[in-house]
Image (cartoon, rainbow over all chains, first blue to last red; front, side, top):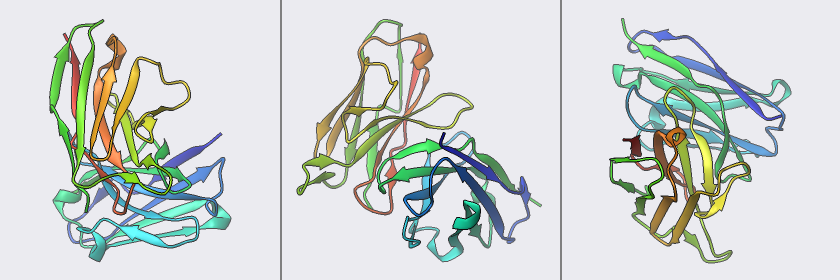
Length: 117
Length: 113
């Protein structure tokens, strides 16, 4: 069955770089896209970016300059790297699948990232 | 970027009542070539990940109860719950996947009286 699981550090210092991994199973990264969505505590959902089945990427306009999404298809993993972290980046980060590049049909459990010194 | 506006921000209803919530987009989500609206609805219960309820504005996902009804086209969309149950306590988000960046509405919080 389709599964996604996020992993990464729970605490990151301001101005440092966040590195998250999404490990997937039950589907191929070369046939589906994987997206990152984040949710600050008590707030709504924000689309962060995506890596498409062909390997190209798209990013949230406001985060583009700090963000990089990549993948390792042999390990079924997708990576998110965001630099120059600020307290406003504190959020739960979800990875989610999009079949055919449309609606987000399967979601991981999310990983809480706190930016604090 | 396409802006998604949801109203109301919160709503309290009694079990068994009907509830409607609105989602408006800043540009049409109707793709002329296939006549599909690129709009999804998600349900997020407290402490859980979002769950896809409806895609293409009106297509329920497998296993979603038929009391959840999506409607609308173009820029105006509605999610209706025909008879609210206690387990429907959640925040409901609309999302457009017509163009990148994908964007979400700010959510409608459903409370049960």
